[in-house]
Length: 252
Image (cartoon, rainbow, N blue to C red):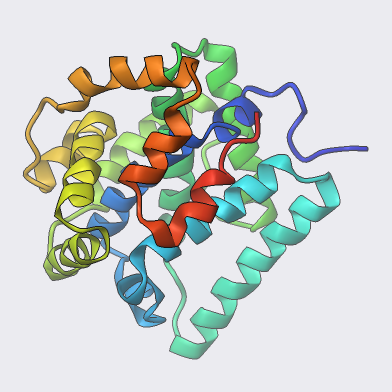
């Protein structure tokens, strides 16, 4: 059986661990709120009405692509493209190419950042492999202006961070909704995770401090992983409504 992502790929290791996925989730939630094209996510009403569900949906599609047989993965990618095309037709205008690229760039960057913060540093070949998987997703979606290699991606990522993010009314509204859906303690944990994983540009726009409390909290949590208490802790600190999704994150 041929898979979209090789069974021995580092990408499967990254997306097969619940902790790394939750870190990717936290980083993406920060950048979605800052993206200048966030109005597209408000247009359908899904993001403001259920911000956690909308983000979990994005993660679920990515995981399906990573772990599926090739034809199934390609159908999932085509489904994503069709959903967005329908929204564009309904609104009567096209989602900017750079907005599509931004989502891919987030998945690449936070995949690498999450694994390196929670596990170990990736070598250049492994980082290129992460890039190549999501590059193929973008090519299947017929996205324009994609970087052709990891080095070009790094440069374009920095350019996108400078040009495509801003703190505005949507940002403030979305963070109010994060707090409403998570509650004050879980919301605080989200912020600490965002401080820990996001690039400086994102932290500056969100007025987040430089150092995260996770620097102190992660070592004992990593001990809990070795004695198999991590799933219990995750269930305690994350919303009950998403417990099934959270418990299904671990593939390994």
